[in-house]
Image 1 (cartoon, rainbow, N blue to C red):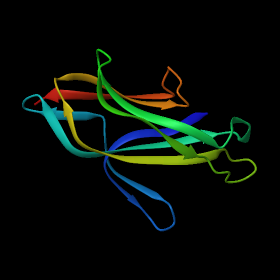
Image 2 (cartoon, helix red, strand yellow):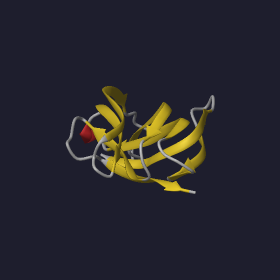
Image 3 (cartoon, rainbow, N blue to C red):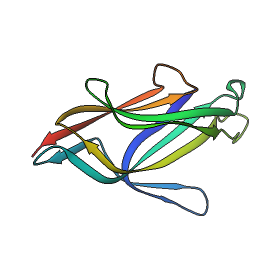
Amino acid sequence: MQVGFALLVEHVIEGRDGKLSLIGIFDEIRSTSVPVTFPRMFAAVRLLARVSEGTEHTVQLVIVDEDGHEVVNKSRSFPVRLTPTGPTVPMSAEIVTELVAVKFPRFGDYEFNVFVDGEATPLASVALSVQAI
């Protein structure tokens, strides 16, 4: 299993044809003070897999601070079904979840982690920093 992308974005539009428009991709939040609450963001992830890896998996999305404390924990595993797209193309699934009123308690480095099937090591980690203006 691989991650095609894992992004934090300000807005997502899903077209009738299933295409995603990801708007406002970011990896840094700037603020004059902490704690800072980001009013609304979306986590967008594309998983890729071979047929031999199976079509049904569970995913967890977690944001942690530099000490490993959870800031956002979508700890409830949610099911994901990968769908075949062609004989030479990996199966894929896109996950989009809205995160509302995420509170970052201090300036510093954070990570957005994608866990699959209860593994202890994230399949993907994306750096995020909260910086003073």
